[in-house]
Length: 315
Length: 260
Image (cartoon, rainbow over all chains, first blue to last red; front, side):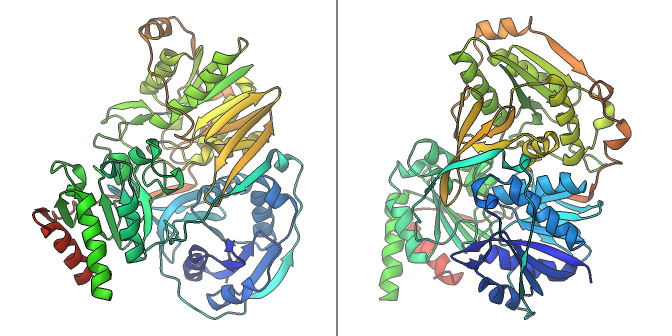
């Protein structure tokens, strides 16, 4: 069986949920081999093996964390060539897509970004034009480079060897052009990762800048918090939480839009959510056309009442 | 100093975007405009030009006749010249071919700095800036929330999920900017009038040394198999909140859907 290289991200030394999703996709296409762009910890191999990785290649090179993207793309390319990989799967994060683009140039092959599914024959599904169209596509080049969106599949355990190995790569001077001279860690919100959350509660202009009722409802549901571009541009919520064309795309089981009108740029980031609830004072807001349940009213009274009722039922 | 801004003419996102029978974007049947995300790139180039008097800002686009509108808008905003790569053979090209042509055009134009938007508002892959840099062997400082040039160095801030990064690269370099980089200016009346006299060159693939058989739909290494419009969503229930009925409806919805 041909090797399918899975570029794996770790968080706190363990594979992320989207990384495990890639392994589930990879098993459809061939023999999943994980590549971790860090020297360790080798303990991560155990979990990767549990989800189907036959081997786990750890790439240690001091250039990887010190320069932007290019060294990682060189590392992935060299490992893919050494393994004669038939496909390379990577998470469709901003960095993942940039690695994919560079690898496609190096291998002179086609690439597909933001796949929401990958079939056994390697064909992909993408959602485009703000979620209004679905595209099925495939790569005709020698190696299929596919960046897959988080939540594309549910990770399924499939015990495999998960044999840890160290892989050696050579990073060129040319790849060391964009130097990371400073890295200021951001404070974690303590809430689920936005793109991975089962429920997302988002606030927009209608919050008037007060996100407390949005955050409290989110916390009572174990949900992630998102924000519309209007709210972010007003300085009410950090850009990392922006949902839409220039922010994150989410596809949760449930999306609650509070005080968000639903401009096309926002719909592009949430239209594929399984269920949508909208709370907005304006009965003409376009978001209501997408909503399974729409409530015309003031989020500042409705959201706290729901949070309170949830607490009461649980008490 | 010469700054090349890459701009794309895209269908209006608020209009009815669709695919043609060959699986490519139907550009003829939709109104187009300069991609909103590229306006931020033009703006950043102009801000650098505003601060120093040795800067030429040239807008480069790749696309059919209508794409000239994207250059026109950049000129109206304040760019000093334009280059339009217009060649029928490009129809249906994938990111691989597009980046090859753009890299060849950048090499020919020989700028000190290339500024791009963070992605197009149509295809939206967001990979072409790094693919151009990869082909040229230039550094790429991408997804800049802010941008500055000092001497021979470009410095950006990139907001990743877990950290805010400061990145430096020596020129020549490729930079892409996000919508956080700063609001794009509107063309002034003076700018609109001045734009008419600014030089725009038209290049074909042979001008940049690319063999037409290596680009276009047939040469694409990414094949579109099928395009399907999303079925219209069934209208849901919309209620008006009265005396707590909204909260009750939402709580019921959460409870029935087993979200609690």
